[in-house]
Length: 213
Image (cartoon, rainbow, N blue to C red; front, side, top):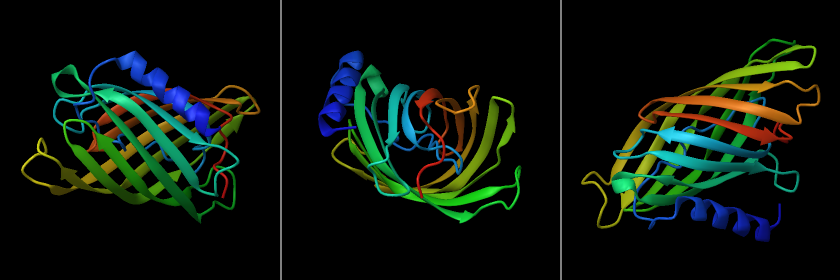
């Protein structure tokens, strides 16, 4: 995807929400990082309760062949306190730690990245953790559940920021990737964030498959 396409995509998202960028949304809730499916272009609806007053958001993720191995971008807009909106974006990084020797075994990845949310105040976040998952195939049906655990170090900056500028949040995500076509050209992604990053999401990704390593 070219830079011009990025600009058009975010312009459309901003047009859909249509308020000043004054609220706050956690950029990594949920993380949507799985050993089996983080590639391609995905569009997700997110309902986040990670921060006070947070509401619905639209999240776009992309990991195209032109990016370095294990790299994915994310970005979007969401509704926060007082029904105003915030822009958020970030970079996801992951690398394999274990690959199962047989079908149905558990794969494990290390994952980290960086995120920023600009709204009522500026939120900078550094997530780190592990994600593990399995996958099953039966004919054209493919299922890949996964669990992510870790922490997020948050720095809150600006006049509207909470009194505690630096906090460390616990993160637990559970998710399921589902495809009904043999080539996995389209994948339905469902996820829920637990711990301090409470959120739910569902979305559709185009040409998923494994993120290039």
